[in-house]
Image: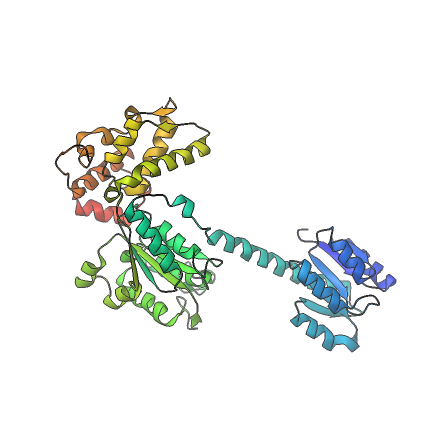
Length: 450
C-alpha cells in the first residue's frame, strides 16, 4: 500500500499494541512508541506518512508534539487520539495543523477510514506540489542569449515589467522567442512561485478553446462527461500566457475581456461565478491595430492587453546575436547527442548573413540538423542547408551589396520548402515551423499556395 507508513504514539501499552497489531493486519507499516519524545526521536531517522498521536501523555502533551512535527516534518499528517474530556483541545489542535481527531475508544474500521482520508489528502498535496513545480518555470535568463543593443534593451524592459503586475502584450514575428520573454517576465516577478500556464490560441477551435480557458460543467456539451477546471483556475495566483491571442475567435473575446476586468468567469454550462487572481501576458505575430480597424478584434480588449507592450525584433534586425545564439545551440545539442561539433568561421559567416524568416526557431532547427548529420566535428558551409548557401540567402550579408530580397518572398519560399520537406503533410510542416496549423493555413491562403 502506497503511503502506509504509520507511527502510533500512546502511553497506554495495551491500547498502543492492540492498535498497531490491528493496523498491521490491514496493510499498514505500523510502528508503536510510548511517548512524545520517543516519537520525535523516531521521526528524526525514519520516513513516515501519518502519525496517530495521543493528546495526553506524561512527558510531552500531544499539542507540543504536534507543533514539533509541523515544524520539523510538515509533510506528515497528524491524527489526534483523545478522550471525551479533551475534545475542545483536539479541535484547537486542528487549527494548529492536525488533520483530524478520533475519540477513544475507537474501532479499527474508524481508524482505517480516517487514516485513508489523511493519506489521500497527503497524496493530493504532493500532486499539487509536483504540478505547480512543472507549471512554474525557473529564471531562463541563461538561455536568453544575445549581445546586440536591441537584445540588451529587451532585457532591461523585461526586468522593469516583471516588477509590476500589469497586462503585457508581446509582439513579434513567429519564432522570435515571445514565449521565452513571457516566462522571463513571470519568473522574475512576484508570482514566480505560482503556475505559469500557456494557452495556444491558434490550435484550438472555439468550443475547445473556451473549455480550455474557462472549464466546463459535467454535461455542458456532448462529450463533457465530467467537470473540467479551466486554465484560468489552474493558474490562480500565477500567470496565464495567451500565445497567438490574435487568433481568439470574436465570440470568446468578450469573455476574455470580462476576466481581465473583473477577475471572474463562469464555466461552460455553469452559473456560479468563479473568482481568480491571475496576471495575463499575451503574444501575437499579427497586426492587432489593423484587426481592430477591420472589426476582427475588439478594441477594448486590445487596449486592455496592451497596458505594457514589448516588441521583440526579428533575428535579421539583430545579426550581432546570430553567432552567439548559434554557438549556444551547438553546445546544447552537443550535450544532448554526445557530440563535439563546432562551427567554422565560414559557417558562422553564412549563418550571420542569412535573413532567417523563421527567426530563432528556424536557427535552432538548422543547428540541430547539422549537429546530427555532420560527419566531421567542424561544421563547414558544405554542411549547411542549400537555402543558406544560395545567393538570395546572402542578400542581407553586410559585406555584399546584393539586392534586398523582400521578406514576404523569403517567408513564402521557406513555407514552400517546409511543405515539400514533409511531403505535403501540413500538420508536421506547421510543427517544424513552430506555428499553429490555423496560422499555416492562413499563410497558405495569403501566399496563394493552396
